[in-house]
Length: 250
Ligand code: COA
Image (cartoon, rainbow, N blue to C red; front, side, top):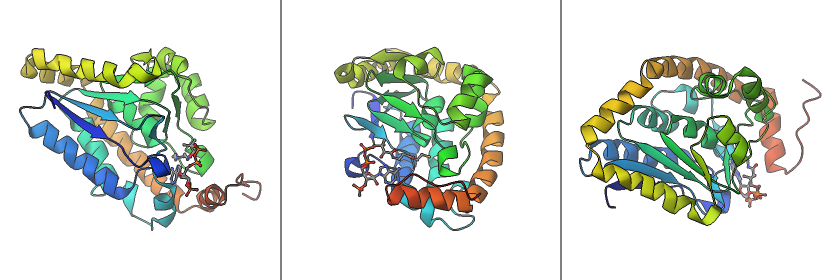
């Protein structure tokens, strides 16, 4: 609509947890937007009060060895590759929680606007997992090692103000306004020459993308092994049984 391809994550009954089918749809939408000359920018949004609770934990628990994150043809990989390689500006509007891949994906967007009620977190370790999709590279680059260690090793959440200080987002916006604000930014690209925008994005990313793909591959191998680990199995079971995980036996 009006030069902007919008991708709305909409599974509110599960707090917008992302399934393989959803990743596939988002990958297809991003690739289509990248090809479509009438699209000048892409906008990614969630639902009021929830951006995404991250990867569906049931899907994590059900994955067999070699499935999903370690497989470059998997929907999640296709989605992240489409996001990293999107030549057009990608704008995210975040209300509520953006957990796990919900925060990771923001590091690959060009503009991120976050509501004052938002909460960002990458609690991979609490699930017996490791950072993914280059967050182990981009987080310390953006915020410095000590902050990245808090966020990735302890899984500490970011307040919106902290996310801004860390260089992870562009601005904190009053809750009800965030979507309109992000849309207005996206629509500004209608008045700009698309070739110059595309080339500028490419220059800004510089050599980063090659390094990003290399790190994604290295993380994915460890992530896939961690998914099968007894620590992760305990964390997934605890989530579904609505109890605290017990890692004392490991
Ligand atoms: N995967 C699968 N289901 C999820 C989910 C996820 N990532 N996040 C939430 N859900 C489900 C819950 O199991 C619950 O389902 P039920 O109604 O059938 O019991 C439903 O969504 C509502 O979640 P609930 O936890 O009750 O909502 P809340 O408002 O109290 O908390 C969150 C919201 C996002 C803070 C919380 O759901 C959460 O921490 N989710 C997991 C986040 C996570 O660890 N993601 C993976 C990161 S790697």
